[in-house]
Length: 409
Image (cartoon, rainbow, N blue to C red; front, side, top):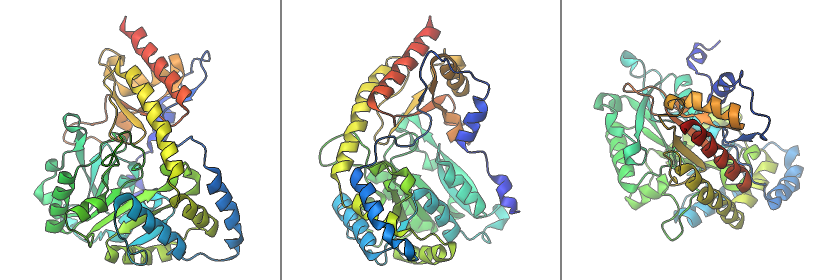
């Protein structure tokens, strides 16, 4: 067996199952889960219809690069969303969701034969983070270095905590904007700093943007800034050493479709296509047909965003009255601090007691982070995914409020 598999840690939801295995939820309440970030809004009918219409393509092997019509639809969306002109033939590839692409990209760009004197090449990740970043790095033969988020700076990653020696051995930097779990969006100045570091040391930046279409403000500048958009604003039109990854899962409520795309540096896209050709990761024809329909329509995205906006407008004030939590920049998570007088501020104990007494599931924040520089930046926080219906999310918030108040007397 591949010995690198031994470096992988249990996934957060596996740890959650272990944590709550002995907990008996209060049967007086119907179960409500805010623990898993799986979209629960209905999949638009026109996407289902396009999927069915594409079934005739099952008789053919799909091309790894995808149908020209799909690449064109993705490029057209980039033009509408970010004002960017992307060459669909050389700067874009369809992928089976951003998760598999994040993993595969690391296998493509990491050279494990380098920097063996320091334990291999470095992959830098924000902390807390999406655990695929860590697994992708470890299975590529790299080591992971974490940049902790700073609550005092809207949970921005503290890139200054990464030493120059580490940057010099870095081959890949994962960024997530809007962030999971914090919802923080990276501003242009932060992008400019990372581009400068990439130019100096030659590492690739992988920009995970799967939450980009769930945001709460309105107006011309409401939509979160994207990585390629930031590069273009700074005159970096070749997108050197930059790849963005996005997905239909959250945008269009089709997590089971497993569809997204990557775009950016043409030289990296060329190598990524070669890797994927051997990896056998071509997207099925029916999924491509449904994806074309989804990328070409914005009406359902606006409606989806309005549902999330309604939930956050109603839920956030309820929770903010009893704990430290605020509306995020974007995304569908609340990143809440456990009050110190509740369960001693322990995110694990809070999770267990809330489930036992009020039958609401949340995810301990410490499961989404690693100890770095002497702290686990997720400890003492819980992630709440507002993916269920409006009424269900409001009910969950009222129960959490009641739980905290009951522990405060």
